[in-house]
Length: 435
Image (cartoon, rainbow, N blue to C red; front, side, top):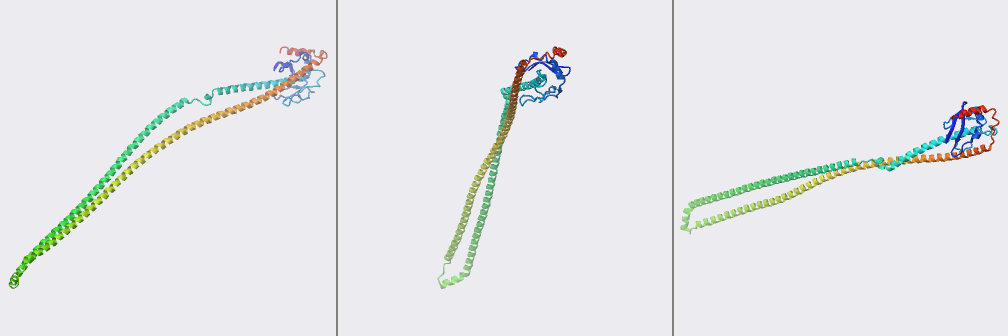
């Protein structure tokens, strides 16, 4: 679109000298020059219309211009702006030029909008190309240095944690060894106490046996003393009997044969000694049997006690070993639980970071998709506008070609207006010349 010369007359009229639309040729100057005065006078008596939908200045319409615009349904020109067929018979209607000027202005505004949208589209395409060329710098920033620092710190933390775990294990082992020695000390102390108690028991038993032996010895002494007493008493009785029976024996000797009292005494003594020996043997046998039974009982009790003590020691040792193993398993379980919690926390943090990165990338991708959809919609709208404008341009071109044909075929009626329009033509030409 190229407007060559546009000027404003004294009466506020809009006079068009010539214009070019699309590829259509310019309007013939021969037909426009003789009609300058008639167009100016007609323009002074036209009815003023308000501003156009595109913000253009008001147009001047003749009183007889009532025909509607013959453009497609997308045209926004008012119905009273059209081709006037009743304004002057055979004269060129200047309102058609104004209508064409209005349409040219509207087309220019559309083309300006199209150029602006194309510029915006080109900028957006360039931005999309830049984003597609460097996706890492925009979508995912470079965190490699930070990741390296984090990995080094994590390695140091793991080393320190491993050292701490080793120290904890050593401390636990020392504690377990101390507990083991403590338990051994307690077991040995208890064994010592048991042995001391056994020794005390054996001493008491020995004391009891010594007391029993002393009692038995005292009984033997008493029996010996009784035996001596009996012997003395027997001897005394024998002496008394001898003294009492001395005379009688003599008398009997005279009367009867005498009895050997010595043999009788010897027999009695032998019987008494046999009884004493049997009693001594019985007492000694009873003492030996009692002492042997007590010693056997003591030996059996000591053997049973030793067996029980050995079993108790073995059970205590097994209990201590099981307690040590249980504590070791507990420490191992605690270490594994701590390492599991640490690994879960570390992987949870890494997972949260990855999820945040994924969410950021998804948001950026959704934004890019929304931008692409919006640009696609704008592009479709621009294509629709372009198609409509091309249709309008084609209609304008057809109209211009038809008008050019009409202007060529119409006879020029300039002789009728030469007498009264010379001054107006000269003034209009003077005004148009400097422009």
